Amino acid sequence: MENKVNCIFCKIANKKIESNIVYESNNIIAFLDIDPINEGHILIVPKEHYLDIEELPADILNEIMELSQRIVKALKGTYKPDGYSIMQNGGKFNEIGHFHWHIFPRYSNDGFCWTCGDNKANVSKEIANFIRKML
Image (cartoon, rainbow, N blue to C red; front, side, top):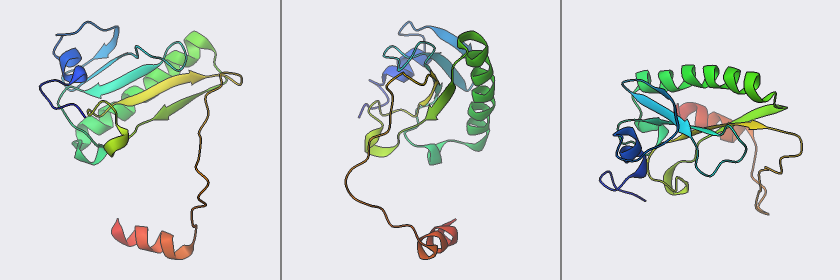
């Protein structure tokens, strides 16, 4: 994972690397993904360096959510997709090392899919109760 000094998203936020910016505020920046799932794939990134969602201050997370609504409306108006996906990978699955939120238009035949391993996860009231207590 990248550290703050070498982080590509920190460099984009600080305008040290050019990107196709679609939105910018004091706290966040949104730009086109350079390796899109589909045309119109946008990343929303906090300008400060954070790895995981639980590290984000509530005001920045709220701003990301509000911008997500606006982006979805814009994507629907621009591309007329069958739907859209919003996703974020955390921990070691965040290959950049800086929190980033994906939003992209989806089409019935776009080939994007979730893949799952062979292990069957447990679902039970006990698991739900345990998680509820942790919240």
